[in-house]
Image (cartoon, rainbow, N blue to C red; front, side, top):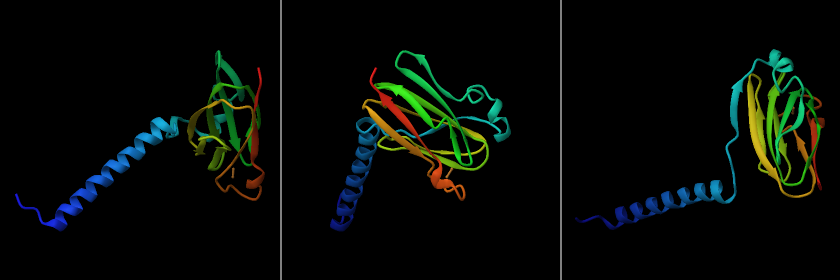
Length: 157
Ligand code: CUA
């Protein structure tokens, strides 16, 4: 079968790009550990304060080395905004907003998620290095948006 040289070139280029992009996805997922944040459940903003987990916001150990952090998000506050965990901990963050769209980004990690009113957002990270990891809101939410911050202290055991 005769294929025109230009057509053949474009077919090879297109095939090469497909292989390149598929490779980039595989490296992102398995090499860099990039994960898509998930929405685990729906929640009305008015119900956040009374919802299980969010009615007692904070960090708790669910089994050795694994923690759950329930964070209530509102203008312009994360509750809690000061979290301490031992180094090596795997932390699953659950966040829910009581009012506007906010963001949750933890410096030097892949944790970066939107907190949309009406939804519970979930994202996990293993903190293998000691240090203070600042987190902040990355969705503009009004006059004091820039003050909406917190910190995860990763300490020695
Ligand atoms: Cu909350 Cu910006």
